[in-house]
Length: 341
Ligand SMILES: [Zn+2]
Image (tube, rainbow, N blue to C red; front, side, top):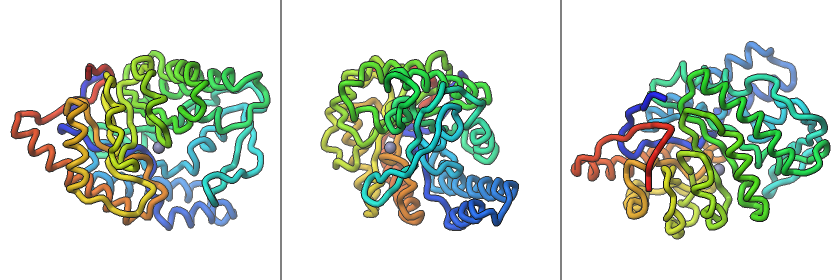
């Protein structure tokens, strides 16, 4: 892939962004049959234009489309892959409900699921690089009932093949940065060995930048697999633990997407706190191998808080950039192969 020049410590997001209130209303109206498909499509496009611009104005170097068209990270893909069927809602995290899908037949890729999303994002962003997040095979399998296949492992590898086709379609369409999201990855440590192989299957043969986002995790379980995973960036959360476990980064030979603000807390971190966190992590990672992002997707925050958190990220990062610039460290490059050892 062509290398893309970026300022040192590029700022990105994990993926999701709070939906505008009017978009939620449009989604509700669509479900009630009050507006048609074309109207809804226009609403989605306007929402994406708006949140992409917002991220860019706030200083995000690599925006996403905020996942405006997705309601939930497994549901979106389960609705589009042949072989899934939805069962009732199950309760997760307090009062949130999740429509749990089941795999009831052979899984098949019906065609691109995220390519149009990417193309629209690319058309409205002025940034040299954009990020497309995609839910990983292990998390999709782990959050589904496995009915048709003999084991979760078998289903995960089938999903991995489908995700691989999707990622290749994104590459073909011109995407240069994709991120596999695997919040479930470390939840069953005894399954890690094959789960890692399934992720590698999903990203096999790509010549673009591939990140892996793992959250809600004990990274000590992930650490032994740093070198086995064929990705060039790990986007990990640290703010929600007060940056107390940075030691776990040692041994990471690829880039770190460093989570500097907590997405489950409405308290807005100060730019000074962001600056201090980045300076601390630079004891473990070369600046050329460090990207800055929130811990996780921002969608559960009020939009105003999400904005303020991004503003703190920008100001805090800018302060560290200034210090690095004085040492002649000014830019970095987005590329598929990195050497960060
Ligand atoms: Zn996350």
